[in-house]
Image 1 (tube, rainbow, N blue to C red):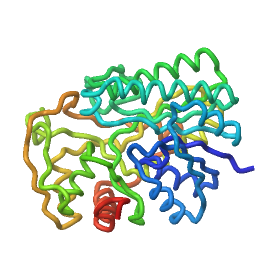
Image 2 (cartoon, rainbow, N blue to C red):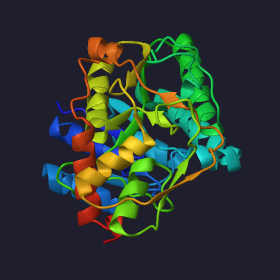
Image 3 (cartoon, one colour):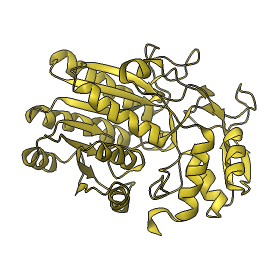
Image 4 (cartoon, rainbow, N blue to C red):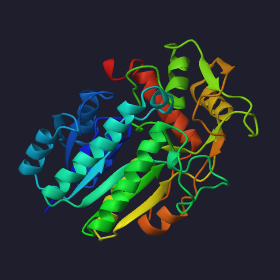
Length: 339
């Protein structure tokens, strides 16, 4: 029998790419998304890529009535929980919105899952739960902390899910700590399409290259890194999506609660990313160096060995492919899904 997966926030950037991977593995996919930073067009394109249909329900994960209706109508094998706010800078300005969306949303979702006998959850966590790490690369057993409300919301949720598992070991929970997703599906049909000014580096670079924005602002040029700009572990979004499909399979073996890093295992600076994108797109990306952003750290990259060992997952795509795919998406969809 085909298993049915509920994907909250499934019309978003990582969510839509994960839907492709799930459909290609013959799961039935139901998406719940409030469209606050996503587009239903993404799901139409997911269907085009896969030749399979997605059931889309517009609604907020904090709406118990919608959740009860969904859990009453479908028998879910597992839930992948992406829905939430995700901008570091914005979280410092509107922290309560982040705690409400991210923390309250997860609590309500978990309550409704338990009430309907669904105990398999993949949670979209973040490398921000490691705070400013004392050493690199980062392993899952490193101390956890947060330098901003976004990261703290993810850390609080991880702790809540840990308490939940201790109280009831019917739960199987995969805490997937992402590093920096980038790139797009090779078809050019789906990619990162922020509704407003991009918070992530790659869509900002792409929008400058296509002429939508005048120049890139690079936050901080005095970090203790090779060229003074921040260093991050950039993982291709398709590799990241495949990690979720691997996690679903792991949950079905009864793994309990466990955290895994999803990253490549090396870092690139902002200036290296700009240079690589210019090479791939053959377009200039003018930039200015500005003050550091509150809540940002100097460098961050993963030790992904545990995911390879437990999930049989490894990132396969490198920086060249990230850049080529990001540019194909942006150049064929200059205004994203609004084209």
